[in-house]
Image (cartoon, rainbow over all chains, first blue to last red; front, side, top):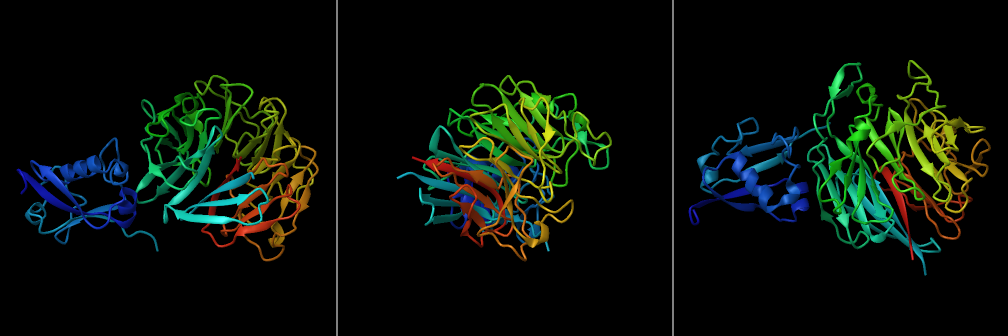
Length: 104
Length: 371
């Protein structure tokens, strides 16, 4: 915890790391409840070029070929306001944004 | 010495090819945006340093990139393309109503006189405009809102707005073409539109000379004579002498009148280029011979241009936005293939050389003539 905010580790897929011009993990300070929605809000706030690449800008719906994983669980179908696992909130595990396997 | 910059969009990134006015030696930079589909890259006629690129991916959607230094560095700008109002429906392949859904930007057309103004032709067919260098995009809904809109149907490649041409002599006049709806014209800067398809005949639709429903592949205009338009349709090469009010066929002696790109010589408004393709389903050159055809009579009479192009075992395609011309004294012609070759001719098409042979499949080729 830093000043009441949780430090969340986020791993982006390679194409989005290139787009956001980051190397390795991104860390985000999240005040309040840590949910997929609040993490994505903070991520897009820090890196506006990622808007629309993970979820639809208007509806907030996850893009079809993007997946959200953490703690060896697929969180892609969880509600945006569902709390993330404690290990993610504690910074012990990263929140993974993944380009889905698709194709042959 | 003057030079050229060739902007190439491919299935896996963008490439910038530069040369001096001789166009013999080329510097190749890229891939920019490696791994992403680059449908189109185009420079501003008002500022050669200002480029716009449409970058997209099935995973991560649409990104628009902008360069202010001729493609050396790039900055992602706005990528929100929201249809204005209730999107409504068009016809789906099975004839049922289908909601308009944004898929990607096919074509970016910078304004003739303002580097910060740029038009975007998108799939599902719509026209957007940015006046702040690509940061924000607003739909020009009059086109999609034309009364025929609900009857438009996608072609095999999707329902894309792929061609945008501004009339340099008449501010506010814009032509757009949509597969498979046809050609449209606005005389009020994109506010209102009407179909300009009279004279087109398409066997693949129930009413062969209908007002809309034609699969127009590409349009071309010479800036000195903007009332004359050339069209490569799904079948047929067409010409209009009255700004699209009526069209007549100029396929003449072409070996096949199917194809995708069409372009006009920079200094000879009656000199036109096409790449005939065997189709409907083959989409490769007749007899495995890659030939550009040139007409110096504004159509009807065509000559094959073969010097330097493969004349056996060639089964590539040349897509609709993958041909361009420079405006040097000896006009240069450029085209890219789905096999990853980019060919250049520095002598109006008489002879060709590959600039590069093994890029990813080429989606688009544009050229800037540099001072």
